Image 1 (cartoon, rainbow, N blue to C red):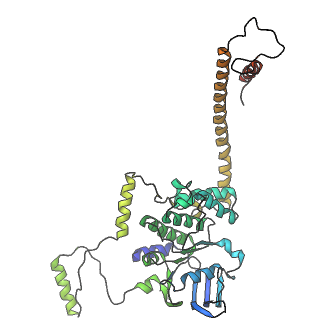
Image 2: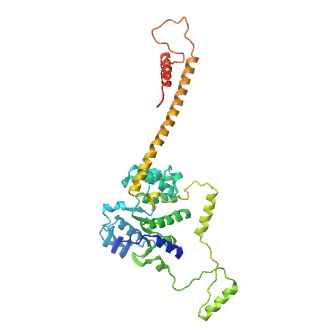
Image 3: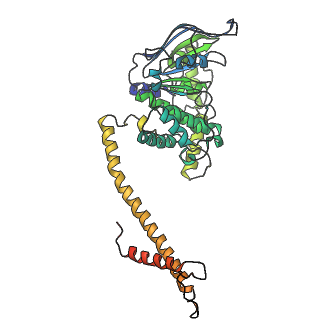
Length: 411
């Protein structure tokens, strides 16, 4: 991401507010059965995640990232120090509805399909049926799973499961979104989409905690970050502060011929410097890959897996209706519903009429094909049966009832 991109992103981002997560001297020590210390996963760290900020948590395996996230979620108790989330203890149930969480491994029910999975989590958050249906459709379209939404989750690839896990983390429209390795298992298309989504959510004002091993992903989206090693913070600051190379200067110009480069080198020599190398700029591999995929999609090439996601779900976007606008939107949908119901009833009624007409025709054929009883047949008080086993009176009754029904207008 260029500095221009960063400036545009920062100018459109709401100003950072009060701390959403605050840790002071935070420690976590794992013990054995005899309460003897086995490992100190987190060793006295201090940090703040401010409202509307995209915060990166970096470090190699075993550095304490996942342990810190679990303490923020209230899944682990701290050993020492202070930790608050939305100004409360992490174990406070009242704050859970404000948090969305994507764990490092997506633990999903393999026999449910995508819609059933999101509906289940929507019910946990207490969303009404109308909100669940709307959000589920928007999220599945956004993460590129709309065409496989009826397949069991157990049949999904790891990348498709991560896409569904991301949708699950967003079903409640969280104020604090915690993502642990969100791009793990995703193809370059999904990775690019996740980064674009995080930037859009950040511009909308969502607070995001991102933990990832893919440093390029963190570099592209995070405002500020800390780097952990051995449970301690070894570096922290904004992306520009940490990545600025103070030992070198880069000047970008149009294409230069050899003569101009030689003149520049002479100027640099007079100041005790020299041209280290001359390179032609090249595009990033991600840009090349996305260009090839977009070209293939423009030619309507088919794929059996997840597709490139659609637009951001409306309830997650900046222009999502709120308050009175949401009520008006709901009423408009309610007004539109009866017409669709009447249309469906009309179609079902026509189909029922057609089926009844066919049944009536079959009955007539049975009556016409049945031979008359022999004149020498002994009269009987019992109702005679047709040779094919059908009761004659029953057939006559059916024909009579059909004729009566046919004369009445269907509502």
